Image (cartoon, rainbow, N blue to C red; front, side, top):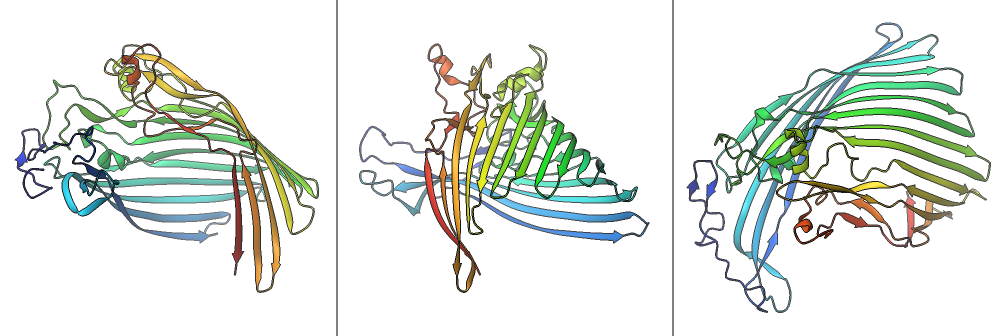
Length: 454
């Protein structure tokens, strides 16, 4: 930064963006030993809160009442600093006393108040249990970044009354039916204030909401257990950073970080429907456990050519496609062997079916190209532990783990930081991929640990 102050701001333009002194960028990355800076982006967060609850038993026969309040505040900040590298020929070591430039200093304060009430009712000799509840939220936001924009954001969002219902019906001492219904609310993510450079109009952002349904059956006895559960989740009012209409009037009092080309906006949501089955059997020294899950998670599917579909495409989402990194089928199975009280060995296998990896979308035009599919994989693991009898240390355990027992090569997850980016490799030729979307699974890993409690 020209001048002595790396945080200097000369004023603000008509859009509220900061006017700053010129940057000196004389370095030549091809010249060994040329001037160079190290970019450091620390983020700090402080959380504080308070919970309270009043519980009343049998004020009315068969009813348990709960009333409560939950409060949480959080102060967060993120800075982007550039320090002079001391000797680029030898290392990337830098001197924190030589701060050349501060690109931004963003801060956000989010305070949440949640009030709740619940009545638990037991009927028919306690075979039927009903939990009826409601929640209500109020969230206050404050955000500023004086090195980027003039405005200081301060607004709040309140939810509707969110009803909850849970029920269990005991058919026999071992069998019971259970189900639930709930509406939920979520505020604007903190990263909308700390991690983006877009215009934010608080009045234009609706809160994220979900509707949740589930129904199931379970069996529990002394040596076996079984459950099957179906669920349906509908999410709406997602929040994302989308292109802004350049012809629209811009209010300088909105949050502007020198970038008037994008804005924070609500997007369409997604639906998730699925089935989960779990089972456990104790055979004495051997026990068996397995869990199977089927999940169909898809984005909403607006009409071709509509504004809603274009908005999704600008976020790297193809309308109607499966949600990234959620397999339709997955299975976990485990065999446990306990020959003595001190020894246990477990062999497990995890199968993850095909899943959507990347929604391939061209930059600028946001043309939908394809959904890239990741192959299914199966990995196995082995765990063994031995409880030592050590005088004075009643619980001492030596444990040995082998993860990915057969050293399989697989893609473990989709990167959250790059999954939504358009595919810029499409401009370099047919079927060229340039974006790193995935995390490679860990190879065979051996771990030995010793744990004691006293």
